Length: 223
Image (tube, helix red, strand yellow):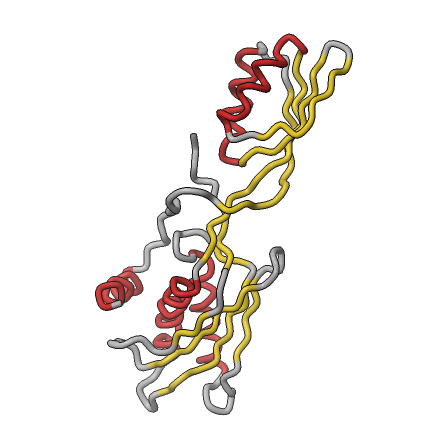
């Protein structure tokens, strides 16, 4: 089965991370991660004064946070949380926006690790139409594809199932149905929502970033 359809992580706790030592950047950043209700999306705010850290540096932090949020801890985007930039140190005259831009995603990753995240995957609701002669097989095969049959209805010579299934399983379920019904089945789906995955997290490769990867590796060795 294709298990590469997990969609995003959601924050389960709040946590604050300030500067990480040793820090190769001329910058210090504090981020607080706070959970939001499901479906809220992501929010970002800064509590660091523009009088202390000007707009170009503020933008760099926001860009770094956005980059980190797009990949999360496992290569999947993060949602349903607020990121607050609430602490920053600028080292004049050597600090540059790039220092803040590169440090922000590393600090964010540490905050997410200590806050804890839930890896979710998309679920679909489905309506399956098949000849009645295949009722037993279609029903009994459903658990093989992690599908749950919620209702069954007979109409003329047809059986109609309604239920839910992980998006990663629908392709194989449809192919199997089409094979043994000789193409006489129809399965209609729509997104129902997201549910927490079970088992070990499934990782998606991160976008390559040689400088950030080196810094991340260094921090992983000391944390």
